[in-house]
Length: 557
Image 1 (cartoon, rainbow, N blue to C red):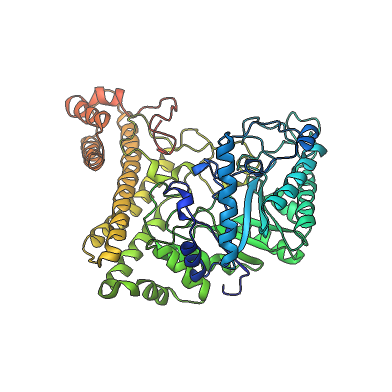
Image 2: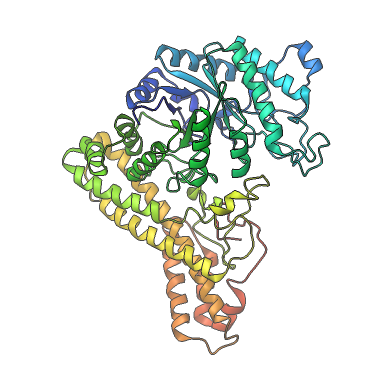
């Protein structure tokens, strides 16, 4: 891995402290010491945390004459005031200066064509087949270079990141019947030409996010290797800690290598990730090490890039493991664990055992259930008392309607078969058991003041993750037990099933109460104790999906 040309990081996370506060010379030097050589200049995240620039229009304007010929047709979603705009511009200039002073390469990340994400569906106003749209972005790129000298490369998303594309099956008369891979490559190459014109040593990195596997492969066989590189998620469906280097990634890298196209793979390199959001302290360094080794072993990979954000001024064993792997990709797991834990002195062995358990839980948890099972910190442990579902529908894009079905069990909101519910329940139970052991061990570890606070934050996050995982275990099992009770409507009911339902509800309530009230669950248990027939007719029955506990409470309707 030491031979990789690009090791890309960036400062701040979408759900953390003010991002601008993390951009200091000290933190840049910390990333450099960890082995990073390239910095992404903005936290380009769809929620626009801290009013970070997501689109090039957020910081660059056309001249009045250019605007007359190429108007902004879609209102921007960034803060609109001149003061806010100037703040974004000032932040970017300061970040460029910090990186140049540290000798770090820089990348600016943006989505285009800007269409306010999926607001306009399959026929958005800014169409890549419209010559005026391509010309407008070429001018924006030229203006960007004049206003922000010192940026080495650009990273372009053409779906998500408030970008969106026409469908050849949609309403756009320009794109109707023309496959996406035939339309997108000329658009990207035109932007790459504009960038190379003003930055001859620079490269436009393209993230073909939301495209199907077939579309990505077709594009990879067409793009110009001299001016375009690929930035790819670690699998076709998403960046996932425990699902890396899938067949799609290997195939794409193989074609890219044959054609001389550099590839950067995006992954989580620190503790914070979208999967655990907003719980950013939970660490599982073995998972990070194993993922990086798998990615780096793929022929054709030129670099690895952080996907969510980094906070290098706090103790982060995942990030420390990334650094060890950057320095020596052949490092063994035992050696890496010893080196990562050495700073804890006499507590090193206990920390290693703790990490083995937290990592095992991560690898057992069913992240492949649905995109919505990520962001587990947003799950409401006081789940609903209707029939458990597995929410899956995300967005209408080529990849969601095709290839991602090979990674996620659920990409729709249809009621799953009871065996699927049981599958997720049992895998969640396995993960919760390892994490519970980790929590018990972690409470016994004694660190000095420098690291004790960080460990406590990890344990606090871990306790919340366990409660949310158990909420899935209980809800899924309660749903299947209720289905068994309904096989004998009105009774007599199987005594052992009734008793298991009582125990499950009681355990559910006890776990939930550690964090919040759960009156719906308490009412369900009370009715079960009083009248099993009334309970069976009332609870854990199918109902409309109203996201009553939030979209990331994946089992609750």
